[in-house]
View (tube, rainbow, N blue to C red):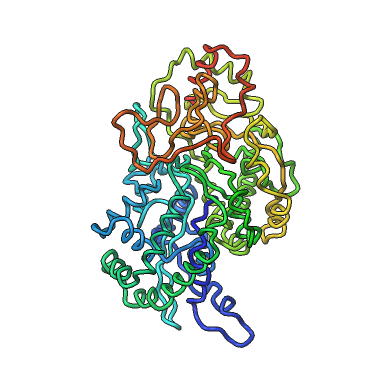
Length: 549
């Protein structure tokens, strides 16, 4: 959940009203215009915690639909979406056109959620796309009405399903799997360019809003014209005058985020820093969420852990208690600070919702590998995995449902991979987290190492390593060279090599981008030592076993 769209509406909190004696506009505005996710209207009546968790994970707002969040991340949805259509598809102003534009950035609009809980009833249909949460905030004095949009969990953590040939079905998704095509950097830049065009042609922009949303109320139209548009115009001028772009860092490539830099931004650590864009380029690959409850500390570097506990400690099945899961949920609530622009105090109020979402997450399994598996090789690969991989990535036992984790070491260390991300969460930032309103639930530390993750759902997680710098398991295992450059985004899967593929004649469902491993933070070397003593046949066997996880 560590994303950020961009600082597009600083000062938008002022739309909530006037100031009083001794109080700033910001103080008067705080929390006065807020909304809740309309997709959940009437849907949280079930007493089943897993169903409620799935609804909250896929469609919850976690307090991110308000004027506070509009200071950094949330946006006035009707205005910004209309700006995108006006800039990119002026000949077809329609909701279908908007979805095509959003799909080009890797957002998904599913007709089916393949792993929705049994018996839960059909999930809501996304109002815009999955992972964009919408709600309408209102107040009577002054008369304000505004549909607010923000990013939710499923933007990053829902992926297309694949068939036996590796062809993706972007309209049939799997919750908990990493979205390999979500390109927040391109979306941020596209939105900025669209708003620049929109403020230069305000009458045309409002006409596009009217055409795209014919049922919009007069109150919301007045809100957009009188309050929102002037502040967007002011913000566009300020960004242009600063000359640093809409954000002081890069969000990365498809399937990646830069949550640490987003957190620094929220804590004021990137203000007036002319070198931030050059330095803050530690791209972080979105992980699979299956079996994450086995972690004793969260993030790629294990920087977040429950207070008073050993940060990297071995876990047995008996350790997967509800208390442990709730500890991880309380930490996860803090992720909403950089990803949704939620304040620390607000994130604490939504810990119960995150705990409920974790009740669903603990049940998430990966999509079963749809391609062919050489079972004889996979059986041999299981023994090789136990000898070469289990000491870092855990022990998997055979069950009727396939391999299942039964022991996880929570190992952390240096395996020779790019260190940019390991150095990103600094001691200064850790101190800010430890002084936050969630300090009773989270202990942050600069570790300088990487925490080996569970490998459950590995085949759904391409490209590989913490920075997404290796396109296939075949390349990671040394069965072929690791390429210096490769494309990612809207891709198919090579079911034999287990990785990113663009077969002849294939049409990507999202806009691909090039990964260049010569760029800062994207070095594709490291993690070669575990495979150095393996024959080619051993590596092929290991590859077949990894398909089963």
